[in-house]
Image (cartoon, rainbow, N blue to C red; front, side, top):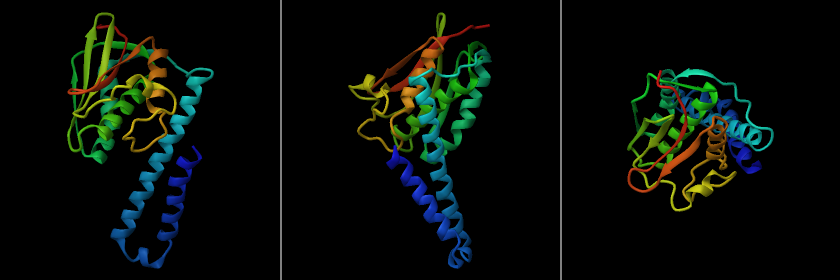
Length: 213
């Protein structure tokens, strides 16, 4: 964890020093490039802070879930809007197929949106470069499944191990391995379970109780 914190903070400090130089101040293009690097490293720090805080809660006293009635349509729209910049950063096309958008779930909007955005970001990072990812919704009787499919190879043969704290796949690009742990904890707190498929047409998702009305 110390290593993960040290890298972005060290880079931000270095970039801040560069911005103070007269040479960079006279070069607007380079200045904007450095500001972009600072924003990206701050994004990584923010993600790390959320994963550490919420992952710790999930492993100790539990997540502070505040449940209420949530329109599926509005939840999906929130997640898509929040994930759009991430997909643009990883240069993938994000699509959705909200078949059950008229229904409702009882849950915590903040945490459910966090789940969807996390799964979308993972698909963007580890799916096919420049490819397509899709957020799909499917009613399964008293449950609703929300899954994010990509054109990559999936989680691999040891998929269940990746839901354990600090577990990471061989091609991990960033983070410390708490993302899927957090998603799993949130889903369990909503009375649901994780779903996934590896190989062609791979996806990761979850089911939770829902109401079609």
